[in-house]
Length: 422
Ligand SMILES: [Zn+2]
Image (cartoon, rainbow, N blue to C red; front, side, top):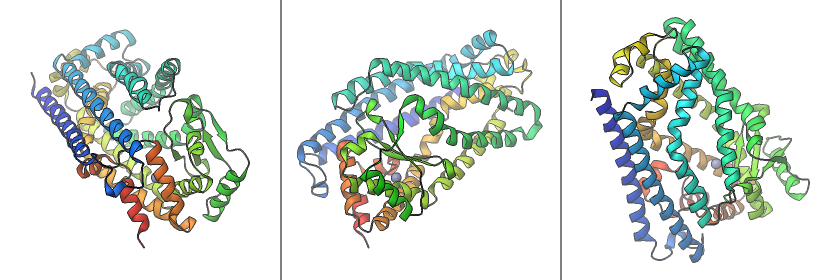
């Protein structure tokens, strides 16, 4: 086996070990601390809900250990048996080496490599979420969702990839800078298009009905300098009992979306607090910051691909035939490089999760603090958060290392104590 195969296998095992160790650490911590309702979380949940949340955490964690071992095993087989070059050659012989053909080769390969995880996605929805009363989806809806996702990947991904390959071919050595600019522009366009045209393909989004709730929320928006024409209500209950609220788009394309489940679960003052938190994300400039971050990541990704495709031998070591690599009218292994990145990129980006989580938690504290001053008191936000954590059976006592690594939101104990300060 070539060195590069060993190196990738090493990083595969390293990531899987770190992943499993973190899950075990978290599960042991949970077992040790969940005998009685811990004092720190007393009042947040009643004992029955707490026991349920412990079981939910345990079931999900065990499941993700099994699925991570399975995914790693699949990737090992893909590497050892050179399945990427094999599939790539089969599909290229069928679809050809033109812009359209190679775009389809990429999208279909990625979809085919995703197939082995489908049963796990099914199990998670229909066994685990079902058992805890969260699943509202049907098999028919689930299959339709998968099909729609694949169709969208073809419709959006094909022209995007064709344009990228054209840039690679036309722009000379600095193609990757142009490709980055194009790709980033495309990402911005998607932020606008996504809530308007893609989300409605999966969910019904309707402007909130007139009434006290709407008046209160619009008034809050005006008070915070966040004029919004509509607040959208999404039928999240179609698939799941989990509740959420989020913010999409930017500038005049911005939209606030509340799940119907959230509206059912909360009082008016609590929904107001949740909205104030979402407006806080906007007002604290979190959206341009996230956009800048995604620009930097895309820039690094294209720089890396530009470096990667210079090494013909690397692709030959991975099992691509020299004829295949050299017979291109497009700059050599651009599509193979993208394929490698989409399958193995996660082995490296995984290690940056703690930084990303840290940054995200900082934004959550800022949005909480904004909501507290917008409403004038932390009381409604605190009771809204308690309901959110309770209704979603969130783990109240994660291991500190585990939450540092993964948690995009601080734990409720941390959020409450931050809200109680000053
Ligand atoms: Zn938030």
